[in-house]
Image 1 (tube, rainbow, N blue to C red):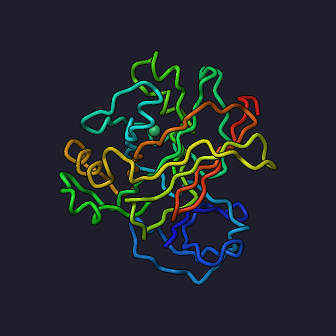
Image 2: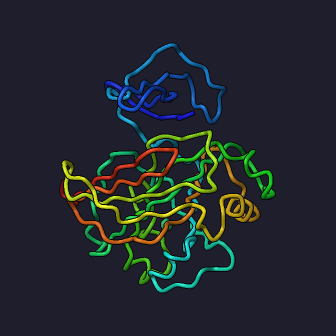
Image 3: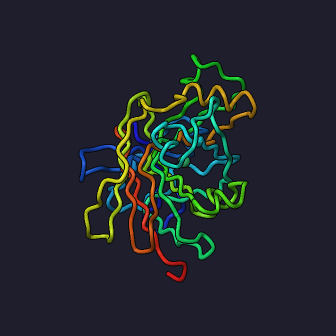
Length: 268
Ligand code: MG
């Protein structure tokens, strides 16, 4: 099931289930937030084409990210693969929606990188989750672009703005609740303009993760209580690189969909 958060005709954000064949999808509107209330269809249907999709979840407490979780990506940046997951936090203000333009901050320098990733959305309050029970605490999966100011990531030491600046964590297009994350293809495309087809710059599989989803959730929940709506990014495969104003990055995760982010100049 695909759970979307959306706005139509300028309405406040609402939630719905996306159904239908590609190109003909409709949003079956539900009352309340499916993370906190049982699915209750209102009977209203909105064509997906008439809706503006929003970030499918706004984490109330945190986004956790995992660095260097694919050996080929660690190697391309000259890093070793960490024995334990390398965990970082970014604030919920870094979350943006599918299609939201991301103005490239002037302070980010030349090296603003895309990182296509699978993102885990937590279902319920949990702590010390054993590997074998991780499925019980996962609401679903979405697509993330873990946008990174690469030079500042090195020079700042802490990654607070290199990964946590406003808009640096686009999520979407929706949350897929019925998905096995063990072996999904992740493809990132970089396009020079809205009308142009993007070239493939990342093409990996989640089966190549150093620490898989159950290991990651078990690990982070040993130190931090996870809350409903918390998001855990799972790392990026090889092929990261710079994006400049005027380009669009499309991240596609098999079984979920495609997250598009147009990058713009700050004055746009
Ligand atoms: Mg990343």
